[in-house]
Image 1 (cartoon, rainbow, N blue to C red):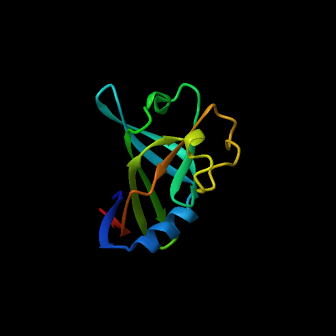
Image 2 (image 1 turned 90 degrees about the vertical axis):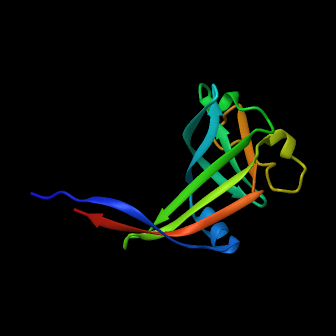
Length: 137
């Protein structure tokens, strides 16, 4: 019996508008940050709010130790039933939701899950590309 592995094949770059569309359609992302001088990744539930990605940080999360102004990366992947999709990367200097209040970016709403800390990654750098899953044997 032969078992196959699905691998993503990187395709062409997508423009900013396609990146924003993919971000608006998604809900779950991976946030990349530094913890004890090593890269760390956590899954978050996010919202795209005007010029930034907003997500809450649960108690006990490694993200709770992230300092304001730190550079974070966030990745979102979308794949349809046919195995094709988009991969989007957002990079920016994180800020607290409280600091974002009144900035006109829509971040004034309540914390999604009541967590004590909510962060915003501004869309300072935004890139993406098409992906296609292929079965390897």
